[in-house]
Image 1 (cartoon, protein in one colour):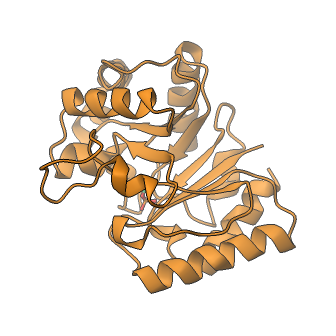
Image 2: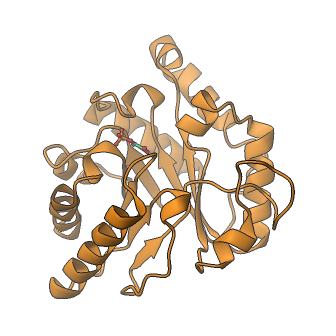
Length: 236
Ligand code: PEP
């Protein structure tokens, strides 16, 4: 069964997140949808939600500490308050816009792994690497697995080409086919695709072999669009 995940990034308020999550929860119940659905709200919108078992709220980020002096960060004391046991690690915006190094990412990964969190681990190449060719692209992606235990049970991978995230430019079906096949050959974990997925291209992407689901930003922020995409995911 395919997976669908929504990354809110820096969008939605506490109030609108609550409405969104409750709406999706009711939809999954009413439509008898069993697919795994994940929502990553902002840290300020984490809350105690009462949810069906296949709907999970995760954190977009957290530091690799329980608590301490890390201004602007949250740790597991804050996540525990809301029973959060799922985290996104390695997202391209944290790597490229916020300057997280592979070393930091691996430390974070190992910390959350040691606590048994479900980790959605993201990899993907920037445009200049993509343009340099497949060998360079794969080389870049393999380096993003440095320090990452790929045998970890509670791991979901996401391939998200940087140039396709939030740009409206989706990778071609051929590109997704090639990269997913290569990653799956080495790593046998669920593998999501992310990068400008929307209601009009989701069905075709989910039909690609080795695509186990999607991680969606922009087009998931509208609840009706997200519901439509959950429906498409169910039917695939
Ligand atoms: C993302 O944030 O992981 C993402 C894929 O964003 P978008 O769907 O906006 O490209």
